[in-house]
Length: 91
Image 1 (spheres, rainbow, N blue to C red):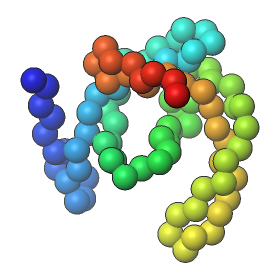
Image 2 (spheres, rainbow, N blue to C red; image 1 turned 30 degrees about the vertical axis):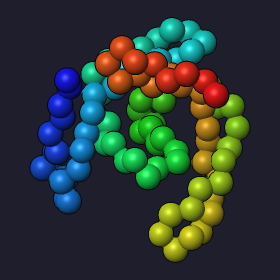
Image 3 (tube, rainbow, N blue to C red; image 1 turned 60 degrees about the vertical axis):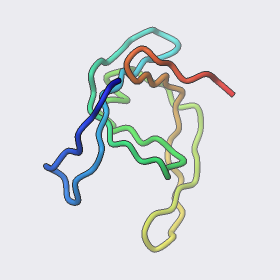
Image 4 (cartoon, helix red, strand yellow; image 1 turned 180 degrees about the vertical axis):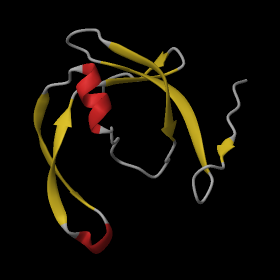
């Protein structure tokens, strides 16, 4: 069994896992990246430097809203996310 600890460097402490990100077109991968696990999230957000490092191409925009419920368009990308060697299966 794989176990992860809460990271206490963020407030409040949160669960983090290590992931591999892969550009599905080019095969470029970034390994062992810490990622905050949020079981209630319906989107995955990547920092711009990871998007650039993977060479991801923007495929569209999606509207997102945060505090204050102000919706703004954000770029969207195709990216493969793996936890250990487990890849998500497309639906």
